[in-house]
Length: 388
Image (tube, rainbow, N blue to C red):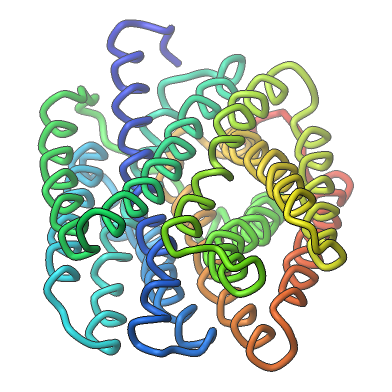
């Protein structure tokens, strides 16, 4: 592993910005869901299906990137993903009707799904275990930054212009960033070969890490997909205010990412993850019982603190147990499972909201996080010694 050189710092900066762009784009869709529900007169289930399609194709491209593009340039994969995402946003700005809107999410999600296997691997292969938690924390900081910018920019544009204009602006920025990334990031000529995904999946430790992260990620995206709709329905938020609410979560996440990365390097990574997961589960369960707006914001903050702390810890744990030439496939598998479950859970939340009551959805989210806690509490699974 290389020391912290100027070149490595530049790679960390560009990957952090790429992570920000990626999650700005995802949160654009989440922030627009209440508007789509109103424009097309949709049920909760039909509304959640929009982001579910995006996340499903995002999930599909994570492992496919590791398998189909084995040996390809990682910086090229990141740049291609940003360019195609920009094209998808441009198409989305022009389509009319619910069905074309949903269909466009397939292209948009596929392009976004190319980032994590390539971008996270660029960092994992450059930094040793002694600082990896902090590096992944900075990388996660970019995710939080993007999740702040996306909803706030949507709130601004739908208040001052219209959402189609916003999508065209985001499209241009995405394509431009892809070009800048490709021409500024330096990459080794050496290409990853590594073990096949089947041999990785035969290791119990790898399967458990992927399963636990998948449960965590499903709740993470369930919160993003459902919280704006819940705020409009229960607390009478305006559409711009509901979009801006999504930015409150990653504001807390900015600190939580850095805190989680720092604690992951200083203490036992598994124990840090367990505490953060339990905090998230308890906070989500609390939504079912509170009605006041002050308590609502408090629970949003505690939920964000817990769930954002777990991103750098999981990224670091996976790197610890993966051979250095297997990062692309490992992260592709982990994020693929995570986004696949993330695509399913909004549908469950939509069904509960339509046929039971909206607040019951938080019990489902809390239960999934408790299951995640049970998985990461399995003994003799998570260790800090790298498997060769």
